[in-house]
Amino acid sequence: MSIADILIGFLVAGGFFVAAAVSRLFRRSSTGIIIGGVVGIAFSVVILRYGLAEFFDAVVVTAEE
Image 1 (cartoon, rainbow, N blue to C red):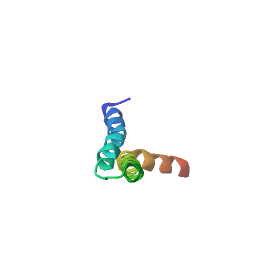
Image 2 (cartoon, rainbow, N blue to C red; image 1 turned 90 degrees about the horizontal axis):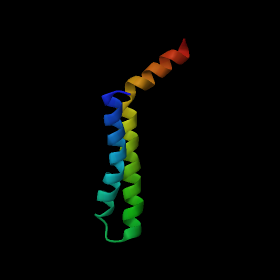
Image 3 (cartoon, one colour; image 1 turned 60 degrees about the horizontal axis):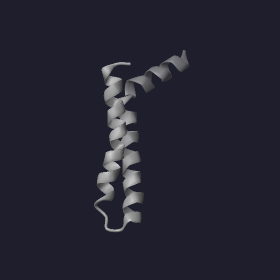
Image 4 (spheres, one colour; image 1 turned 120 degrees about the horizontal axis):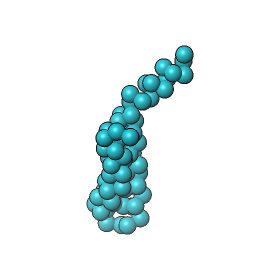
């Protein structure tokens, strides 16, 4: 496991803190939980998609060979 893997892990886990921060912006708790959760998951998915782009490219090349 490299330092880059650890940093990506921390960024993905940071999606929880993004969700908590967004949920505090709304008055009703149910609205904050739903929208905050969606934003937190979206943040984590974006980090995974763009942070592991080299890995996904390598998997596609390996599968084609």
